[in-house]
Length: 538
Image (cartoon, rainbow, N blue to C red):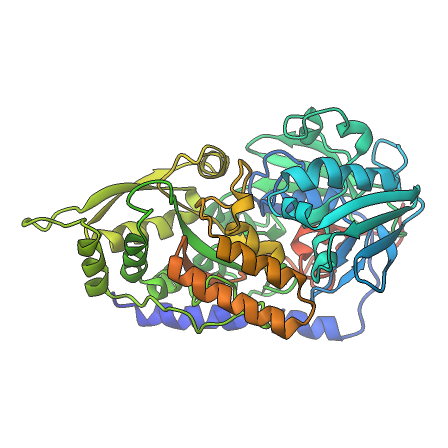
């Protein structure tokens, strides 16, 4: 497949531009910063988040909204180091197994109830460790949670565990109100659609399929914040959002496709950047249902990998912003990453030979070897068409099944009723946080963004456990490199592309983006301010 020269040029330009703030924005950040102003409404184009309970989902559609409503014990800065949030300070015992958190003393829930350590204990024991797609794996790590006082919570671990603090942000550890969830089913509690948090913004309304509206929390425990009056999240697909941004109807374009990003490069007053999204580095895999034939045969999985042209997929569907994946783990976790694994370059001869060896022959007419299906939403439409075309070249017929996001998530993760699917799996801040969940046996559960392929290998589980207990980063990295080699051989999922991806900001009218942390897209509203606001809070 040849790639148009102009596409290669613009892909390279976009990839270079989004590595940081635009030149204009970078110069502004290094100049003497203007004094923040107050008031105004920020409108964000995003996906429909579904239930607004961050304790039961790792969805990248939900957390940009819930991150404005809830807090975790800590946040992660751009280097993935923990900084205070609900916990103002903490200490770790000499044996590395006891973490004591001193909580902010004057925090209230949005309904006026006092926040306390009991909320933290309840949230972890009854929700996060049972239902969160990633955090539930900490059930094998945490021995006990004690509350010696209303402003102190103590976690005792079963063993030393290197990445523990990196788990405790809103994305993986949002604290929920005990007084509203105790004695209920967290999956169906009506509070999920009218959330009560401790964060900078309060819930006002949720129109399904349209928007979520949040208003300023005047009693927020961080003095002087937030500065905006309102946040409006409008649910849009990429093409629609591009038009709305062009028309000035939205101010933050949350999930642009690579091609849609091109039109906003070097626009005056607009910033296209990956800064503040470091925590969203991801590998997009093709997920195969290993409980269904013929995907239970590793020869078929490898044949599919040889048949796919990931370089072409990256350059066309992602405009070069994301790169072809060279490993199951994102390259943005540099200390653990290795590209020295089996590489499946585009090779139809090898793919055909493996399919023949698996007994899936075309026959004398050179027809279809077998038919299967791929579930996806509209954000993956271009990728789905490419996969169908490329696998068709080796005799695999694919029925494309377009669904809304909530429907394919249910099919893949809850019902396990699928042949092939996909997911944007974010991996930072540590392989044990974002990556392990895809592969370990204990995470084959009915919960979104878990082990959807239903892959289970005791050797892989053992290596993940060994890495988590190793405090020396180099030794940990060596274990993760062994895991990458093993997983790239077994191929329970097929890595397609690797990267972060930009967001687009109307930086002429809104300031304060880009300095808050590696997951700023989940809590940007706390510090962002409107240039046309008032000098003081009215």
